[in-house]
Image 1 (cartoon, rainbow, N blue to C red):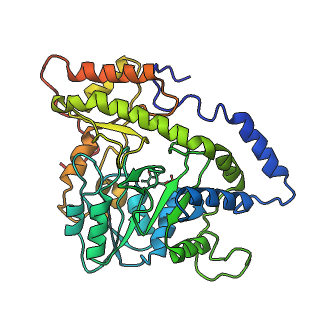
Image 2 (cartoon, rainbow, N blue to C red):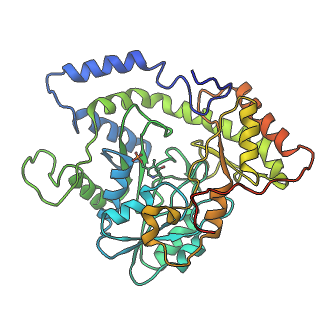
Image 3 (cartoon, helix red, strand yellow):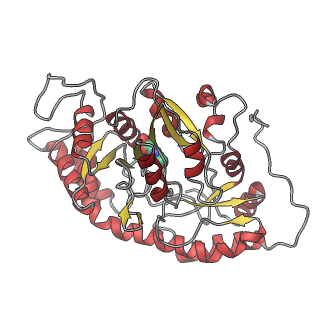
Length: 392
Ligand SMILES: *Cc1c(COP(=O)(O)O)cnc(C)c1O
């Protein structure tokens, strides 16, 4: 047991499903086909997800990262191409272009949504830019209408990294279907996380779907072993996981609805703290989802300490901007700055959010944040600096 009154992750992950999962492992493991990758269960999962996306193509892959790399490759991104990615977010956003010999070009983020700023992205477009890859972050979708307009204007491809935003809708369009191609990740912590690795590519474009389908199994078409039509990857979906996801799919809507309800409550309680050093994400349901709830705190360490003293766990995701990592420094032009991504990296703090969080636990988190923000004014310490950081 974690010892937290309010743990960050659900302490009962897969608890209720455990017996069923063991049954399904046995079922797949003893089935006469002895097929453990890309079989009938994977196809059934793809079809079920496709039906929820009004018939869009769904291609199951070995991970969200695999989905991202293969989607980028299917868009034609290759050696020497530039790909505009956000300066804040997870490593695969920058690593995927590099894996294909392309160059990640970092765009700064919006100071409130923390997602790619379309204006800054447009300033980074050159004659070598081939694709723009915004990512939905925490609980907020990127500004897809303006990013779509940008890519249309410059005749670029749009890859929507919707890895964490399954089920979100912006202006009536599901997350994943705003770009030429999108994706969802099913890694444990994501909203449809499973006990293992996996993800899907989603697209309305049949040719892109066909390219990813070929790519995920070493360039072999289905039913065509040892005939390699293209240089591909090993990014295949596991049959046991597919069977488990199919069994859990009917509950997904209720789990997402509970997450959305918790987000609404956080929004309503924390938005009024805006002038008091704790900034909540933009409120409302349009373009929102309940993956991770992240506030911007002027005194992050102080807030984390206050929460800890009250038994509430909190996490810092992405404590530095992507171009400030050693791995991606070669792609950060000398002297370049991403002021809003860097400032957010110093202030972001994520609060517990999962379907098993009770109303009482949420109230406890909210009370602790409020008490901290409304404490009598004292000298607020300067935000602590990451000692490894060399960018100041
Ligand atoms: C989790 C994540 C990925 C990668 O997914 P994996 O399944 O962990 O490989 C890609 N992009 C974003 C934005 C993510 O959050």
